[in-house]
Image (tube, rainbow, N blue to C red):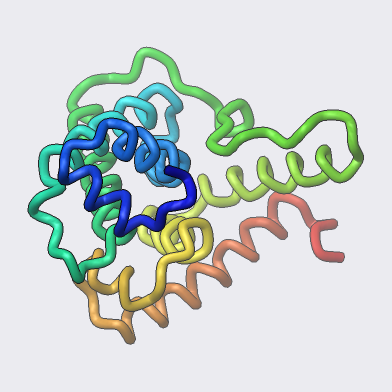
Amino acid sequence: MTNLDTDQLLELCRQGDDLAWEALVRRFQGRVFSVAWHYTRNKEEARDAAQDVFIQVYRKLDELDQGRAFVPWLLRIARNRSIDRLRRENVRTPETEVPVDEAQPMAAPEPGTDEAVWHDDRRRLLDRALATMSEGYRELIVLKEIQEMKLEEIADLLGLPIGTVKSRSHRARIALAEAVRELDPSYGA
């Protein structure tokens, strides 16, 4: 099933193929978790949100138009579910907060090599820098740079004109660079 493209997997899922559904979830679970984590900043909340996302996708799979791109649709659901969880969480007080330095939104590299340690340090620096940014800028960085969505897809997802997304995306990248330099003045030197 791993050699099938997404459209083929979706068609098999619509036909009730459990193995195709499992393959689809495995293919996209990392991206969904990453989006959820960047909104919730909490591993458990992100896992729960990701599970909610796939439940909703399963229920609404027949509603996805054949010509519509799956990934933007999936990430829209992930974004909306994460925001919903944040709204509910804002009503409750958090039991404990996880410091950004301890959170691990992405899989850690293989231990033992200098390069792996360097990449892990860069990932933590990026996460800390993202945590200092405004929600709007962080969202653009996550969608464009981490999830690799096209500007047109982001504009559609956020309901904004393409020109607005382009200018905000540019400003978000500048803000990220400034945040990274502020956290680590030696970075990029």
